[in-house]
Amino acid sequence: MTPFQNILSLARFQQLHLAGRFLVLSIIFIPTIRVFTYPPLTGNLLEPIFYIMISLIEILFIFILLITKWRHGYPINHLPAILWIGFLIWAAVALFNIPSMPLKTGGIIVTAQFFIHFFFFVAVSSYLKTQPQAGRILIFSILLSAVVFMPFFWLKLYGAYDSPDFDWTWSLPGFENVRHLDYFLGSLATILGLSLLTKSFKKSSALLASLIFLMLFVCWLMLFWSGGRGSSVAAAAAIGGLLIFFKPPDWKRILLVNFFVMILAAATSIFLPVPNGSYGIFRFLTKITEVDSIAAFSAGRIFFWVDAINIWKENIWFGIGAGQTKTVIQSASGTYGQPHNILIQAMLAWGVIGGMPFLGGIFTTFWTKGWEFHRASDQIGMMPLIAYGLALSTTINALVDGTLYYPFPIFLFVIAVAVTRNYNHKSIIAS
Image (cartoon, rainbow, N blue to C red; front, side, top):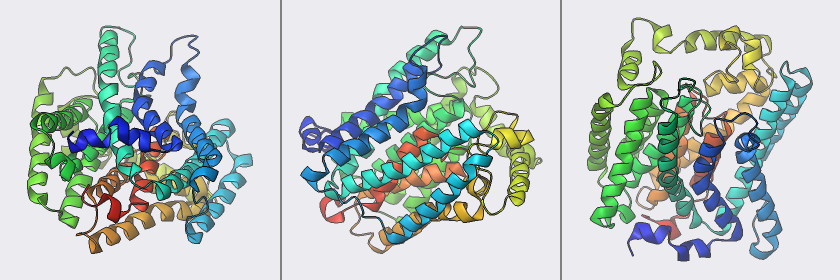
């Protein structure tokens, strides 16, 4: 049995606690289930499942962890006091904003989702403190989810290709927007690109190694085909930045391999059909090179950000609540619930008092773990580095998009951060 097969073997799966098994299966099948629940059909009873799926899974995981706590002794209250203080300050501001939200129903839903995300993070961290070796299985389950997802995604997309009513921008199978597909593809590309560092990959068979390269190529191919820039740049920056900064063994060769696969995918994407103006490598390149117009380069985000900042200045201390952008900002066109920038998003939603703890919790993790990994570069396992890369890619993308607003990318982000924070180099060194 090869190292990669060993990671996701039935024996390894059976060794996981009940909470871990539930989470692994959820990760694997979430993208595919989403394909069959979105876009919604008229009268489709499955439609609500798409919108509540991530929150429901997070709640179920927390419930399973609590009912099995007596058996495994999960350390529920294990986070640093400063993190709990930050959460309580943020929570107080989030609840304070609810009565004055212009879009009350949507704001309450988004706020509740962020509460659930936090306690899901606490639960996953608790689980990994007891069973840290499960971290690599969780990360590789994300790759396995892509293997299950891709055939169903393309079959359903092919079936809708000739439909005159099919909206290519807002109706992709499993995704509310083509850029939401990019979020997932960027995560996959980051994991695959960094997984080339692992001993498991280097010891794998030629066939399995070829499949990994093929998956990496397909992810980049689809990213360039989709025409999005944020996820592509974020994945490339996360992979390149971590390789150059940490300089793990064989990092130069891995960097060149990633660059070669990315360029090959970009060139191949030229030959793929372009459904509308939101797609295609030429859309990608045109937007990247439009340096003569900052507004064109940012796809209108500059106007969006200026409007959002002006609204924030009027509500500087407590913000206006989460999910209110489409109502209070004219340039949002009544469509976008977040301002496509995590810094502005946090400040607009919760002001200085609530936004600073929210942002501080995220960026402090990157800073402390980054330097910890740097100081112990000869002891760190590759799997925590891959998880760190996944979280970093998501956060970089959140500077220009909504990856830290929508439930599915936050779900993957929380898992990545939990694995990063709770790695045990003695048990998963050079994994």
